[in-house]
Image: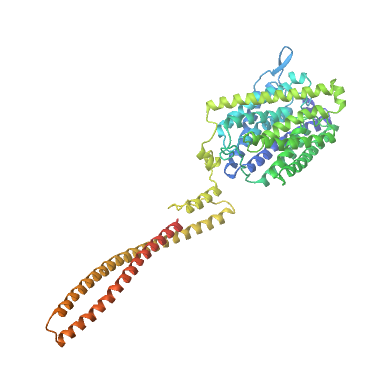
Amino acid sequence: MDANALAAGITGAEDLAKLAWLIMASGLVLLMQAGFAAVESGSVRYKNSINVALKNIIDLCISSAAFFVVGYSIMFGASVSVGGWGVIGTPTLFLSNIDLATTAVGATTMAYFLFQMTFCNTAATIISGGIAERCRFMAYVLVTLGIALVIYPIYGHWVWGGGWMAQLKFHDFAGSSVVHMIGAGVTLAGIQVIGARLGRFDAQGKAHRIHASSLPLVSIGVVILIFGWVGFNGGSAPLGPQTATIIVNTLLAACFAGFAAMLLVWAISGLAEADLILNGLLGGLVAITAGADVVSPTASAIIGCIGGATVVFGCKLMEKLQLDDAVGAVPVHGMAGFAGVVCTGIFCDASYLTMWEISRGNLILIQIGGAVVCCLWSYLMGLLLWKIVGRMTSLRIGPAEEEVGMNYSEHKVDDPILTLTNAVMSAVAGKEKSLSLDNVREGDLIALARSIKALLTRQSHMKENAEHWVSAIENLKHTLFEQQHLGSLSANASLDELKATRACLEHVLEFLRDSNNQTGQTAMLADLINLVQDRITTLTNTLPRIIKNLDSVRHTSGQLDQLAGNIRGGRR
């Protein structure tokens, strides 16, 4: 053992192992940020995925900075008491309450700060999923700052920093209430203040599901979170014989929660809904977090089932209340967290009751009361925080921004899928200028973009040909109409002339009949007139049929006009 290790209070391999485990557990909890980013990015639509992922990164930065500056001292500083009950830690800046040359691996070491900072990160990042796809980036930044500076550390002091709830023997081992319910309460307040996404509920209040962009990504995120939870719960107690039991309890709860959620969803809807099953599994992890150190593996399995079922029913309840939680954050972290806190009192091993000198009934009441206090504190303070931030900046994006997606509206990142969709819709709508597809350079979408561009080019050529056909048909129609009109006029005029000629010839015949001088020439002339009259009669009978046929040409012109209209419609 070197001099620096001895100065830091590390006197043997056991202390060194405990320090290494705490640092490793901190890394595992930090890895959960990647899990949350994957879950939330996959749960929202592609056009908002970058915005959600970036929020998961920026809340890590902001919450860490705020917790370092003053949050840690508020949570773990010397308790300021009112009537003997600890209310808040003494605020000090920049970890000045930490002795860097500590003599024990405990609450005053830098390693412990590191571990607790990652917990603060987790509490803050829960909010980003619930209010996803409509909360402005700047508003989220300010809300994250408020959580890390005030809401999380004050309640954390009550439970973990020697505050009044710890004095009442309220037990939350790794943060079902301190971390998860705090995040869920602020999320619920935000959901109510900001409102639902466009199209999530109709005018009659009926819910319409907005499908996730990538459930495989969500599944990967869930596995990462399970892995991170090993450090989340396992690192919340010093490395020792109990560590393995805590980790086993954690994994059992997760597995049984996923299984219970699957069976319940199957029973309700007749199919295995992936999002509810995955969220149910996370609910089991949240539920066991409060009592992983004081319950048996069998009890952990039961708590996991309760947590998974709570999430399924909670998601249904949120829809019924028309509360739009984009990723199910409130059911997973809030409702399952509440169930886990209460179950800690119900399933706590009797040996701990003896050690704490408390009856099971009293512990259950304290657990229920502590969970209710957490709900009220997180929700009411969250409501106040959202209102204050709403006075400082706009909370919600506009309808047009929501339609185009927050990747572009908030960060000006082009969405190639949206570009392709708009190009096709533009072409279908018959707009003169389709969107350019030259900026689509993303993987497999390049081939799709080229195919769509080829179709649009072909459509443009077909449109030009259709224009020529329409022009030719219209010219033919006008020509036929003019010829029909002239032909009808000529035929009618000829008919009138023939009728007049026949009348004149009739007068000539009458004159010849009345003439007293009847000769052979006169008789021949009369026969000739009768022959001409017969021919005129034949013509006068034929001309109406010709006029009728010319009228049918007018009808044909109308059909050509209809054909041109159909071509115009197909062109659009």
